[in-house]
Length: 135
Image (cartoon, rainbow, N blue to C red; front, side):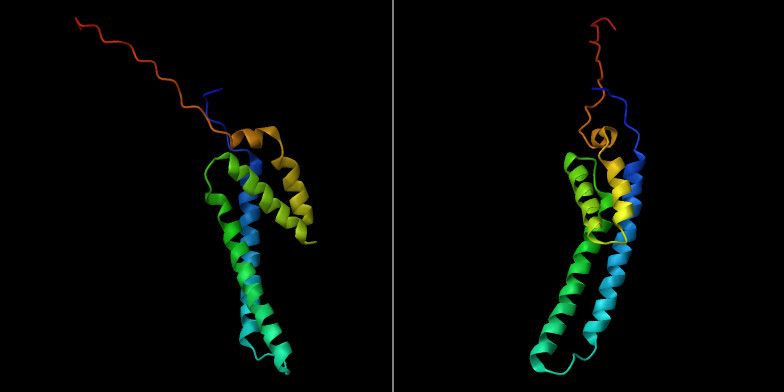
């Protein structure tokens, strides 16, 4: 293996930007559903419980997704992080708005240099010379 450090591929930076933007979107969605959950439920006891439960469920899902996306820029260089990035890109395929960005990012994410960036690097070799007794 090459002992020179690898440069950070542009796809890694693009994924970080993509993840932070989507985290902000999910925070906004969570706040919208939280404000809806605080409103009075529609009349009718059964439907009121279902609507309130659905609103709080969406707040929870938005919170979990925003945490999953906001973690991306802070993850270490490990092989599992490449898969995590792939999963976050795949989540973008669930929205018509983010599909174009997800497709573009996926094209660059599956390149070998990005995968190689997340592979373990061997430490640089240090050669030790024995100290002569007369020195």
